Image (cartoon, rainbow, N blue to C red):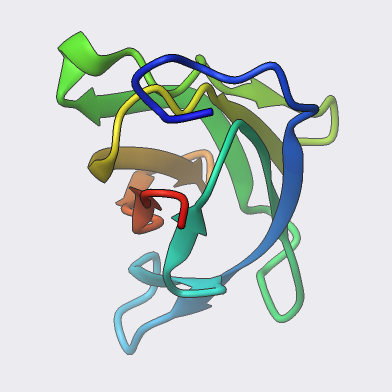
Amino acid sequence: MTPETGSTLAPAFINIHVTAVELGVKGDYTIICDPENIPIKGPTILNFELVAPTPAHIHFESKIHKKPDDKHQLSNPTVSTNGKYLTLSDVYTWTGEIDVLLYVTDKKKEHGFDPQIRNEPQK
């Protein structure tokens, strides 16, 4: 099935390791995703997981900014009770780069990051 018609296939599952590394300035973090680029080939569940050496006090926020808003590709995020996991679903009804910001917090400051999600055409 094509992205334009939707899909009846079971969704794929991608686990993304997220690391928050403190920069030279206390409280400033660089957020690194592994994989760095996330190609989507069909309906997919995306699970973001905070991993070491991320400091223990860093947690995901259930906040999201997405563009284009009118494409409705990504669900709102669900964050685990311990704040270490964030899950989204991508319905894959459109191909192209999804401009999205997800957030982590150290309880004093939010830090946004773009996980580089791209809905790619199936071959």
